Amino acid sequence: MFSRGIEIKSRDQIDKMRVAGLLTGQTLELLREAARPGVTTGELDKIAEDNIRSHGGVPSFLGYGYPPFPATICASVNDEVVHGIPGERVLAEGDVISIDCGAIVDGWHGDSAITVAVGGLETVPDDVRRLLEVTEESLWRGMAAARLGGRLTDISHGVEGYIRSQGDYGILEDYVGHGIGTAMHQPPNVPNVGRPGRGPKLVEGLALAVEPMVTLGGSETDLLEDEWTVATSDGSLAAHFEHTFTLTPNGPWVLTALDGGQAKLEELGVPFGGR
Image: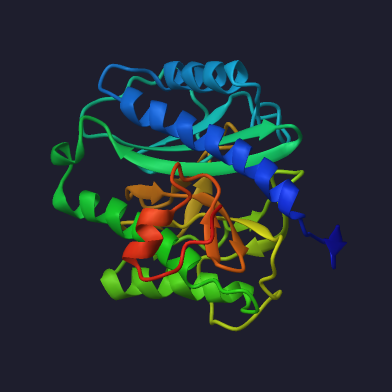
């Protein structure tokens, strides 16, 4: 069902999205472990495609858009923020890689992203480690701010408010989260900045992908010659985290988190809405 262009799912359809979300989340956990020094981004891509297909899924990103995206994952290293194309690049200790992954199962999409310090957090400077922590926490703060009957920008305000409270970071405004369901990108857009109380009402059956993109420098970016990779204009390092989530009468349910987001939401004092 569509309401003002926004796809509203039934309970059964949300359950199908959970299957796609779990496959996406499980694939990212494989990639988190595999992102080690000496591994190429292309090797990570093969792991992702093999895992998705072997579990009955189809990669969401492969062939998407124009020019058609040529891979299963986006692999964005260091100053690359999003949409990096995997290939022959060899990861080195101390690199930071953002991995974005999507899977389709029975026509329903899951979309999620993580940022990993190659070789472990102890291999990167404190400001980089903190960048990753702040970005990931802001994602959870955004989802935790969502309530049935609330408004879309309550999420935006939750993301931005947390990041601003933690220091002088760049927050990308030209790239945003989105609705998700039978297509990977649907209305409405989910900005990472904004005042609360605006935009579409948050209702049961709405699924959203929330994805803060944060830098150690400015928020300006450049599109590289491959027509996909987005990098910071000032060369500063970037982080990107993303989850697909929905709201039930009990609270948020994070469809791409292996535990549905239960542990983190409870840590934040937010009721868990999963089933």
